[in-house]
Length: 113
Image (cartoon, rainbow, N blue to C red; front, side, top):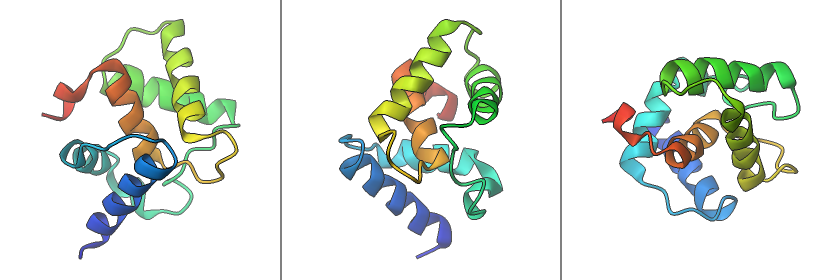
């Protein structure tokens, strides 16, 4: 099993157990690939949900640039909702999992088609 396949399996498990979501494995793999080399770095692989600068980067670089969403208050609300779904007390919030939740929330699966 490749390193990426191992990570996708770990992210799928988080979606099932912590987020109570049945993951679309094909979409999850595409979102994981879209994260690039960040998934292989322990620091970059996770999102610091308590860091406003980190959340601003996710908003700007993922929601606005990657998904092509309009910059408005709905983005902040969706990001907060994704973190709530993952669990605010959850120490490791994997970037690919949060991105997957946001893609599903906004119905932007076509970006990864």
